[in-house]
Length: 424
Ligand code: HEC
Ligand code: HEC
Ligand code: HEC
Ligand code: HEC
Ligand code: HEC
Image 1: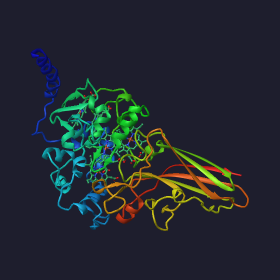
Image 2 (image 1 turned 90 degrees about the vertical axis):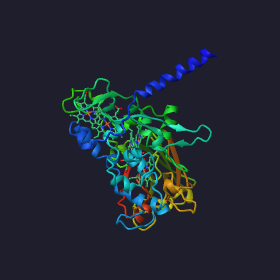
Image 3 (image 1 turned 30 degrees about the vertical axis):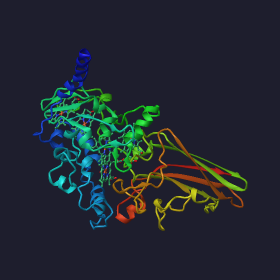
Image 4 (image 1 turned 180 degrees about the vertical axis):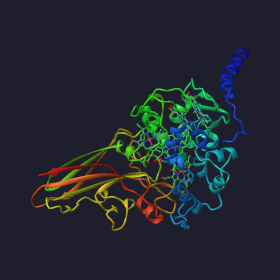
């Protein structure tokens, strides 16, 4: 028995000892990106154009926190509109430095006033470990950043190399930086619903073998010439250098490789039948991604030889919902033949779309998992004579159009792909 206890102590003392090697200096002040970027110029240039590099100064984010429209007027649509007296967890992932320093939720305005550097070079490169915590009974995650991150603030910068030598800081090779779990720190948000599910969606696909890459391999691409990664550094092989682009749904280059659309049309029983298949061919998680506001719209159109629209015969299930835009502009697709791929939330009182912070349940979930295909069918009247042209477009929107209309947000429709077929 004694031997067993000794063995247990020995066994458990190994990881404890390893964890003790990580030194975290609470007095350490994070350096600004401009300091690191003076030597790591490419990293700074790439990172500064990303959405992550811009938060918490991204206006859309601030307005969705404060409950303001684009003009800065109170409209109640946002976290503070529902919880005026609570700080909320919004600063957790958008300004992690201040929240972790305080050890609890911090009001966003206060975090910015306290000089948050946002998601900075120095923050990411002094993270020692990230845990993904899931209750096996309920399936729910613990995602509060204060519980999932181990920091190692100080002079040692953690990165992918085991042979880096810098005059400005110590370096150490960090396995967690090469893995999706590093990104799970923020790309997973358990509220009443799992309001950001990107990591979990990736993990499910990765475990099945549908996806083989880590987040970094797609969102921090390699390429270009062999080069140094710092002024004064040695020339490194291009395939060992990851660009800090973090492109996602706001970037046409990523959206271009995300989906494939196949269209077939034919005459059957006196009507035109159109089959559309949308495949998630390039994303490492669902399409659109794991945040509730993102949506992708399939718009189907059939015309006769003279260019007149054929009458749509299908019912409600073949039409786009109000979230595709209600109004008279050519971008308001509600009621138009098509399908929306999204996971919109509803509040307890039935308001749509809700944010994660006031969501009660899902309205629907039509997001497409990696390498899977969604099939849909549409019916139209046949013209008396002549050829028919069927066109389908796939459009990405970072938020729902009715919400952008109310907020006064500038919402661009990004066409991911378009296909046409002719029927004689
Ligand atoms: C969101 C976290 C994050 C931020 C912010 C970030 N990095 Fe990185 N960085 C990483 C990860 C992850 C890797 C390693 C990726 C891999 O090799 O798989 C990396 C790699 C590097 C490397 C090794 C060379 C390379 O490019 O692969 C350097 C140097 C570096 N980062 C410096 C910086 C600097 C300077 C900034 C700020 C301008 C910055 N990083 C911002 C996560 C981050
Ligand atoms: C667990 C980390 C986390 C927390 C907590 C969090 N966010 Fe985010 N937020 C993210 C991530 C990650 C994204 C990017 C999601 C994506 O594109 O898939 C994001 C994106 C957003 C966007 C979209 C920005 C744009 O320009 O498209 C808004 C708005 C936003 N968050 C608001 C909030 C508000 C308000 C809160 C508090 C109620 C909050 N967030 C709490 C991680 C978080
Ligand atoms: C005076 C120039 C200089 C400054 C300032 C500087 N670095 Fe470095 N850094 C270097 C050099 C040189 C290397 C080694 C490059 C190599 O070996 O290829 C390096 C390596 C790195 C690595 C790779 C470590 C590894 O083991 O993989 C990271 C990450 C990094 N720096 C992050 C930062 C961050 C974050 C800051 C700001 C807090 C910063 N650096 C400031 C020059 C600098
Ligand atoms: C400290 C929190 C944090 C970490 C760590 C983090 N992210 Fe993010 N990420 C965010 C937030 C917050 C946003 C949304 C910013 C906004 O739009 O205001 C975001 C946005 C993004 C986007 C969307 C960009 C767009 O154009 O829509 C991509 C892609 C992304 N992150 C990839 C990654 C990858 C890959 C990693 C891991 C190497 C990572 N992130 C680590 C918080 C984080
Ligand atoms: C196989 C490549 C691949 C992998 C692996 C991958 N992504 Fe993506 N990601 C994409 C593509 C392509 C898009 C653009 C389509 C879209 O927006 O869903 C994207 C979009 C995103 C977006 C924006 C979502 C939206 O709909 O606006 C975020 C955030 C993101 N990825 C984060 C991550 C994180 C975090 C991981 C790892 C857990 C990851 N990605 C793994 C390819 C990948």
